Length: 139
Image 1: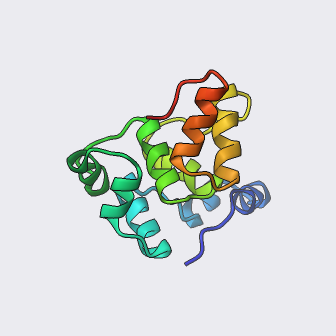
Image 2 (image 1 turned 90 degrees about the horizontal axis):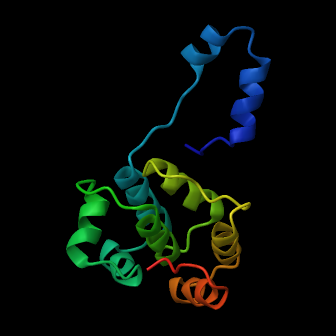
């Protein structure tokens, strides 16, 4: 089943005759980070071991993130996002699933990260850009 766009859900909410009818009929997606990452692994035909390695994570900690036994920091989620070459929408959804803030283009560091996500940069490249521009690197 394809995920509906936020704009589509918002339009349905605004056009609904009552809040109760919308809430009763709407399908709210709330999956854990581990569930979301598993779906992305399958969708992108990636191996968890390779993603953990590419994300420059400790192997044990990386597997714990993927199994849901550890809650990663925002930067750890970003490391995984770059290792999996996620889109901006996928990255922000992973951040939300992890219970941390999404990327904010009004924040200088986040703007650099957003640019790098959008341009398909590697984790190494985003860290080079962050360092070059005087911002804290991701890892």
